Image (tube, rainbow, N blue to C red; front, side, top):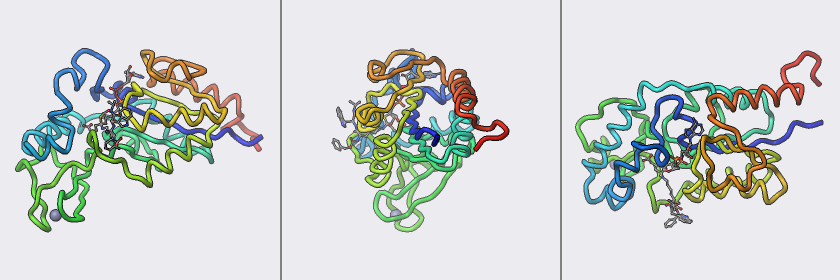
Length: 243
Ligand code: BJW
Ligand code: ZN
């Protein structure tokens, strides 16, 4: 029997166990204290690039010491062992590659990448804190911006298409640590369900997708490794004499 095809959508909750704050759930999560309309939109950046950069520089400083947790490492192992596996993340924190995931589709970009608002200049930049703010393009002198997707901006079309295809074809969609309120990301697991596949949700709370899920499991740093161990045993992955 061929192994089931698995597609995974991760959100901020998978990194909660690594100390990275989420956006919407708990008291003190980011959007409770910071108005996204003032900080995570192209209009906000046009109005006050220094303020927006200070917000992202502060978040980079908070994220820099974070380490992947067992949920990130589990997904890296799945990437290595499963022939038909796609990891799609909304996260910009860089913890999936740090855990060893090789094939990752980044829907909302990467906070450790910076790009020019005018020319094609792009750079990987891990400097914390970043100075001076706002940074300027070394090639044309215009403003640099975080290489992330703000509200009202389009996602990369190639990335989104590849993600949609993976979820359409998947037998199992794992939905890990996302409130599933931001589109188009939240739509992806719906494709799996529509095509007869199942959704397994890992979240500490119920979400907009819970009613479509066949199974709901708790905190991802505990329950994802547990689910994967059971799945491997059931499928005979990693046992001697496997075919
Ligand atoms: C745990 C846990 C533990 C805790 N274990 N779990 C259709 C309908 C309505 C609106 C729209 C629509 N289509 C488009 C829109 C507009 C908009 C949108 O979706 N708005 C909604 C808010 C309504 N979408 C867009 O603008 C997108 N662009 C777009 O569609 O382009 C086309 C277009 C162009 C022009 C006009 C219209 C359309 C772009 C969206 C970009 C999102 N960007 C952000 C910011 C990135 C940069 C930054 O970080 O600053 O991405 S927003 C923010 O939310 C971030 C996240 O990736 C994203 C998703 O959040 P996530 O990951 O789900 O986090 P939380 O905090 O919400 O949830 C955490 C969960 O974890 C909770 O459920 C906890 O319970 C759980 N949890 N601990 C497991 N231990
Ligand atoms: Zn430039």
